[in-house]
Length: 163
Image (cartoon, rainbow, N blue to C red; front, side, top):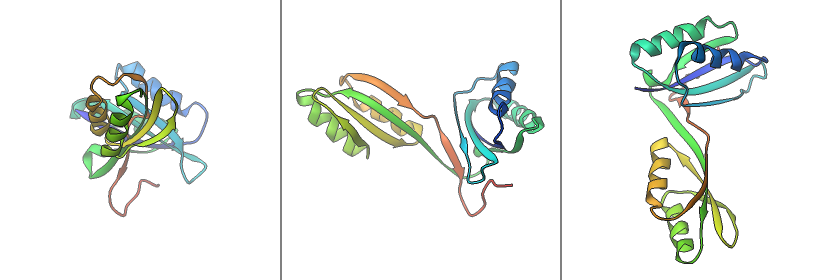
């Protein structure tokens, strides 16, 4: 089962390496990983997506909590949350494809952020399945390049993940 794990950790050099090393040493796969500073300059928030049954995820969380740089760990699967991903996609847009690409971007609430004679770059945000659906809807329209951020998640409601 897919899990989004949010980790609040000290904004120190080597902290990300220790988290990635924990996954590597135990043979767990990281599907996506995103890390950035928080509103507190001493802390960073790392969001990663991994797969595993409840027992594996429980073990991962226990091991993460043992790391000295980790302040707090939250499995987003346990509570209502909002998930978003960012995708930048460069598409060949010539002839009749130009209008079709424009139409699909509107349907998926994407933004065309770069235009030239032969291609469009479109920004699409949303849950991962929406981004997958956009790519599938393109059909025969040639995709030149795709860049995806990986999932980010935040719990719903008034309570945050701060310490």
